[in-house]
Image (cartoon, rainbow, N blue to C red; front, side, top):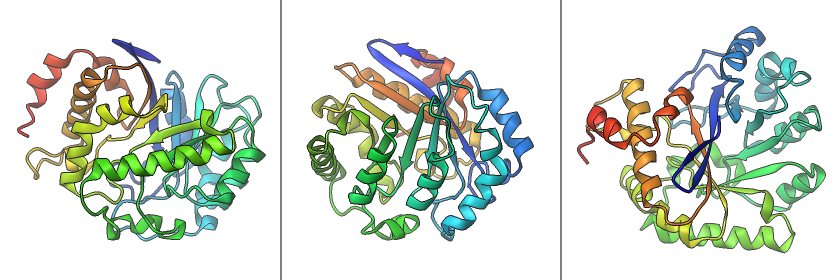
Length: 289
């Protein structure tokens, strides 16, 4: 379902949460049969981003063993017959889960590790070298340690967000360049993680300029159903959040001046067909900020 908008190449990845407590779709996928129905519905997409732990604020962190149990009941039964044209993105900050699951993914399945911890340490480099085809989502998350990933709102980035994002990406890009792994990086501003409402809005407005400035060719945009999209604050309907997210995405695309590949990570992938119809989206959702 790859799309082209002006000079931007867009990949559409659907979000599948095998969790009981995700704010947007918790409890929808808890068995292999439920996962199979979602996989069949979305097999025409460019990728599926699969997670088994909710890192939304106020949710309690789980162990990698509990995460593994959830994945064994949902994702793992489908790995052998996974569509070879569908990227499998593993959304986990647990190194143990990533290594355990990657060992079971067939070699000809395109696979990505979506590591929301944002901690590029020797263990991450080692895992990337162990799996030569693995791509890595580098998330701008300010938590001090990997173990504190689910507590990200206790570590909100101080001060202006764009200078902090620029510093984070430049330092980590340099790390990947030194070990010849930069070509496998997908940069993710990680909307919502360790950022307050004002910072998320500033990031939405200024990210295109930062993307044009930095040299990373592939970026992930994960603004789907984020609470900071609510205009006004009391708007809570998921359909409204889906529409507002797509509108913001469309507006940001118009600001880019250099070509990029952008991964649109979304809970409502079929809405992506509306990309490009900016006026229709704006008339329908009418954001007031």
